[in-house]
Amino acid sequence: MNADQVERLFDPPWPDPVPERPFQPFAELWLAGPVPPHFRNETVTKLAARLMRVSEAEAADLVAFGVVWLDDRLCLDPDQTLSGHSRFRLNPPVYGPRRFYEPDPARIVWEDEDLLIYHKESVRPSQGVPHDAYNNVLAGLGRLLAARGDQDCRLWLLHRLDADTSGLLMLAKNQRAAGSLGKAFQNGLVAKEYLALGLGRPPREKEFSVQAPI
Image 1 (spheres, rainbow, N blue to C red):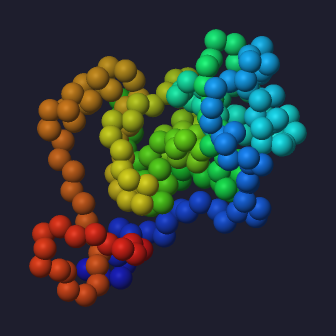
Image 2 (image 1 turned 45 degrees about the vertical axis):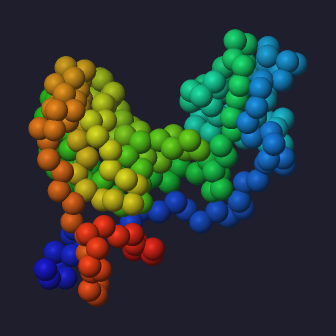
């Protein structure tokens, strides 16, 4: 394998940004717990602002970014009231609500009316993580479709790749295709092949852990 092939297969990662000022809530014990009775008629923004000691505008941005969960479900609506919810969890990212990732249209390797295949960058999650619903491939491709004027911007993720892994990610563009292709994955009709680049001699064991992956 020559240098050009290595560069194409193992392109530079897209890591999280280095935080300018790590976001630190004033009290760890308030990151999760029951909804306080005196907040049950308030919005999730007011609760986040109070517990994280930020302004309501900053709290609303954090909610829309995807850091608040109510009863183990993601809440993206800053105006959502806490009435009817019993528990909350706040997952503030150390880099704050920074929207730094947008997918590259040139990395779409196949697209038709049913299917979209994207060459995922390494160090980008396939879908949202508990502290960030924005900087992931699924959400980014939805924004890309919306920006180019597609009427239906919803995508169904058919499988996932680990955040550190680059490679082809298959997404369905409608529910019919999602059902059909999802069954193909469930029935083992889709084969995955991984390629790793290493230096030195591999150990004799068939399975081993890499302590410092690049």
